[in-house]
Figure 1 (cartoon, one colour):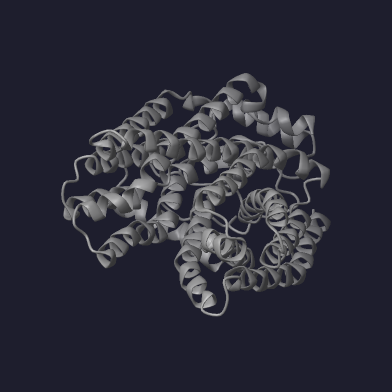
Figure 2 (cartoon, helix red, strand yellow; figure 1 turned 90 degrees about the vertical axis):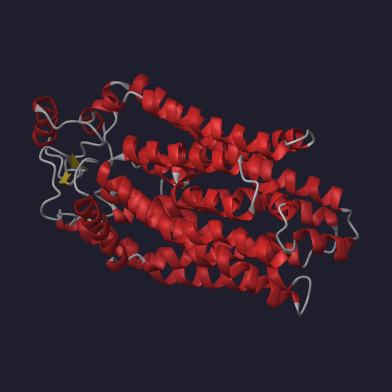
Length: 474
């Protein structure tokens, strides 16, 4: 392990690397803090502009549809041109979008303002890809958990500030401009990061060649010059060798990869983006994406009619239900700090941890649907927040393990697109299930979670077998 760490310049400068990671945590916190100031106010504002409920619904869905198609594209683009320029582009265009939102005095301008945000509000996904570049495979769950916790805290605090600003005249416009300033501040913070210390723009000079040579001299089978051990899970996307886009002197995880300059022609960037997306689409990762989709819908069904179900089943007032939701959200944020210790407890066996968290999530949804009292709902929501947080981190980490670090942006973007599909399907399924019972949506969620467990039981032995075969051939 010491030999692996010596291979990475980042391990030689742990303090600088830690500062970079902490700055990314701040970016994640501020990102969701700004966004959550606006989200609760959007539907009210568009109706105040004169939109009918139907038009308001169509306008509201514009953002989700754009995110569905742009997540993978922007994530792959970050693999091609690098994290710095893609992250800055997303932050600056999001600033433009929220600034236009602060000037929206008509429905047309409101819709126009949502377009750049819908297309380029992928800063969190690129931050996750950047974190995966900076840390080793064993560190990744811990760092991702902390990043998710910081982002979740921002999402909890943002509505409080947004609600306070809304009480004043022109509150929506003030909130929108404040959000734009936050994203502009994030762009400045990203610009000032010491990018020379990151893996993305690290030149493969004589010094790194020497460290690579050192790895080989120590008889380590696969050079790990980005601090990521890939011996257990071979990268599905390792054949990322599209002619014409290789930047000499770049390598990741011991495999040469290409980084196309931002100044390269658009057709070359699009060609590289298409190549990466094609490899993800044609790779043997359908099982992970399907598990992500099933669990995303199951979790959304749990929350879909939570307030209505609490009122009908236990005669709870909306205020008390709001407290219960806030309690669950706070636990979900704090659970991010448990991801690292839990993965260490499992010996970084992410497939087993994903299986157990999926079983626990499905069981908790069932207990919530059959709960005879509010106290049992409170108990299930406590563990539900923890299990879903761990499950989300597990599925992302497994996607990166099996896909390889060369296309981390593409993989994370594809995962977000799959989740966006769940956001489209969940309201429809929830409405159909509620026709039968107030508890129909969570019971349907139990069925979907059970299907995800069955899929994992079938596929995990094949994942482990692939890893054992790989280690034997080496």
